[in-house]
Image (cartoon, rainbow, N blue to C red; front, side):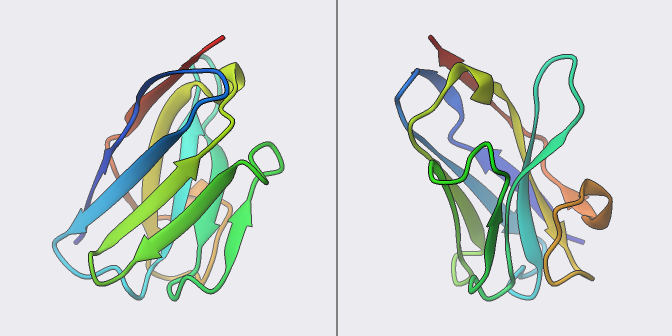
Length: 124
């Protein structure tokens, strides 16, 4: 079992930046693919970014490409999401997730472990 805890969310003005962290405990996640998803009020949870176990491959939704960067520090058992040039449409609860069985995934159904989420609010 692995527990994931997100942090770093908050209120920021449009154009600003935030860095989200996802700290894992219970076991090392160095062999897991990791992903970030988000869910805005009244909307489905959607894929944001994913990273392979080694960090050598990253994937982004088109809506965040060029603005967000996913990274990981396996020694710290932590995954990050650097968010720059934030827009009001980025407002959502952001979740990190771990996938034991898939080398990479854009699909929430392929992630077994989820954090509780952290709220990101971008004011325009």
